[in-house]
Amino acid sequence: MPAKKDGGTKIEDLPGIGERRAKLLRERGYPTIESLEGVKVEDLIKIKGIGKKIAEWIVSAVDEYKGDDVVDSQVLRKEEAKVSKNEKYSRQLLEWSTEGYDVSPLEKLIKEGGKDLDRMFTAYEKSIERIEYIKKDLSTLNVSGLDEYVDRIMKMIERPSKIKQIEREYALIKKAAEIRDVDYELKKLAVPGLKERVEEVRTKLRDPSKLEEVKIDLKDLQRDYKEDYFLEQLSHEMAPAPPMEKKTIKELQKKDTAGKMIVDDLFLLHKKDLKLISHHTTRNLSKEERKMLLAQLQTIRSFIKMGKSYKSGMLNIIKYNGKFIFVLEGKYVVMALSAHGRIEKWAGKLMEKVIGLVEKEDQAALKNWDGDVAKVTSEKKNMKALLYVSSKLSNPSKR
Image 1 (cartoon, helix red, strand yellow):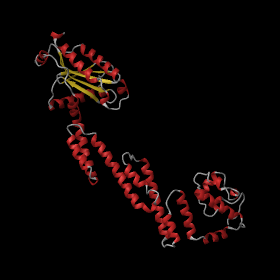
Image 2 (image 1 turned 90 degrees about the horizontal axis):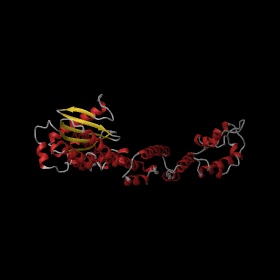
Image 3 (image 1 turned 90 degrees about the vertical axis):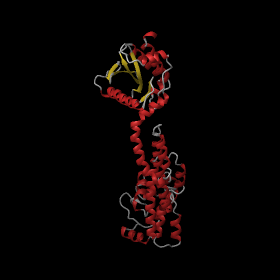
Image 4 (image 1 turned 135 degrees about the vertical axis):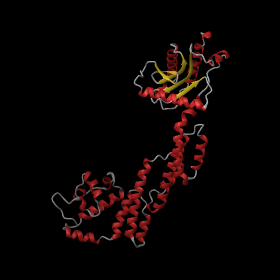
C-alpha cells in the first residue's frame, strides 16, 4: 500500500483510481485517501462523473486500505504487479459501462478465458473513440426528414461491437442529408423556363450513386438561373393594366408622342436588397424585349447602388436608350417608372401616392422583409391603377 506523507496519502495512490476520478474527488474536497475515511456511497454518487458502481468500489478500496499496515512504495509496486490482467480489464469494463456502453461481449470473453484480450480491448477502445466522434458530429448535423436513418443508428450507437454497422449507417445519414440539401436547391430553381430540366435532374437524384453527377448539373442550372430568372419571373408575374378604350390604344400606337408622356414599364423593388417585387406593363413583350428589360433593371439597380448622382428620398431621373426612368424610394420600397415622350410633373406625384398605399397596406411584410414577394399582396392593384391613370393623363382628350 502507498506510504503516508505529511498531510496524508495522495488520492492518486489508491489502486485503480485513475487521474480523471482523482481530479473529481479533489475538487469535491477529497485530496487524500485519509479524507475518504468514513465516506458513504451516497456521498460519492453526488459527484458528477461517479456512478453507483464506482462509488461502491471506492468505499471498498478505502476500507481495504484502512485495514492494512503502511508499506513503502517498493512493496506497493510489488502488490500492483500481482494484479491480474482480468482485474484491470474488469475496471476498464466498469468505466465503459458507467458511460453507457454495452460491454457484455468482453465480459463473456473474460469469463470464457478467451485469447487476444489485449487486442480485443484495444479494438473496443478505438471503436468507442469513433462512436464518440460520430455522436458529436450527429449532434451538429441537420437531420430533419431523416428520422428513419437516425432511429436505426440510435438503436446501436452504444454498442461498440457493432462499429461496422454504425459506420455504414453514419455514412448513409451523411449522404441522405446531402441529397436532401441538393434537392432543396434544385426546387428553388424550378421557374417555368428551367422546370423541365430541374425535374430531370431531380429524377436522377433518386439514384444515390449519381449524387456527384447531379451536383455538377446543379451548378449548371444555377448559372442559367441567374440569367433567366428575371425573364421567367416577368413572364409569370406581369399582367396587363385594366382594359383601356380602343381609341387610347390607337393613340399609344402613333409614332408621334412628343406632345405627351407614355409610361412603358413599372418596377417595384424592395429597398433592402433591391429584389424585384413586381413588373407591370401595358405591352405584350417578346423574349428579346424581356432581355432589354433585364438590362434596364440592372441599370436601375446600379444607379441606386453606385450612382453618385442618386439622391435618396427625392425623385431621380435616368436617361436610358431614348427613354427616361423616374426612380423614387419610400421607406421600404423603390419604384422605377420607365417612359418616353416628354417629362410630366404628375409622374412623381403618382409614384409617391402608390408607394404610400403599398407601404401602408403591406407594412408588416415589407418591414420584416424575408424575400417572399408573395406576401406583398397590394402592389398589383395599385401598380395597375398607376398605369391606368397615367394612360388617361397621357391622352389629352381624357384630361
